[in-house]
Amino acid sequence: MLREKLIPAERLERVIATIAEELDADLEGRDAVFICVLKGAVHFFSSLTLKLHHPIVTDFIQLHSYGATTESSGTVTLVKDITVDIAGKDVYVVEDIVDTGLTLLDILALLRARHPRTVQVVALLSKPARRRVEVPVDFLGVEIEDRFVVGFGLDFAERFRNLPEIWEFAPDEEAR
Image 1 (cartoon, rainbow, N blue to C red):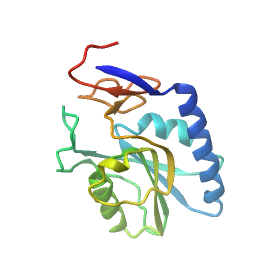
Image 2: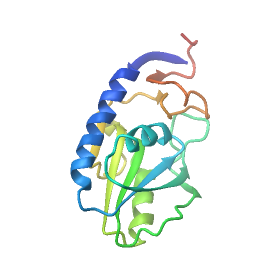
Image 3: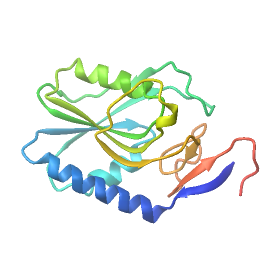
């Protein structure tokens, strides 16, 4: 179950504020569309976009790759597509965590086929030890070790998304 608190809520707030400052500097003169990768990034996305001072358009995309395990299946299925026209726009894909890179690679290919002016990735967490494909992360919050994490939108079998901090999760241990 919950093994160790890795990133407390206060640190998450500071990290998100820093990313928002970096994005605000980048957004000057851009026609920006922020795309939230559901469901995991929704808390990060909301916290982040509320801190931005430039007008943006928001939309959502959902893919499925985990199920009720701690390992990615390697198969990514589109569940919900975006509804906004992104042709000629500056797109910011907002992810909770970049793990194997497979889901993000598929999202980027899907979006680039729609001819945006630019596509950049904003990720709260990155776990480079698990990468199976290299993907760009243009704005990053925290790089973490190879641990399965839950909280602040991240889940195990749809549970623990509501925790206000990031925890290491071990499915075979007793909860703390």
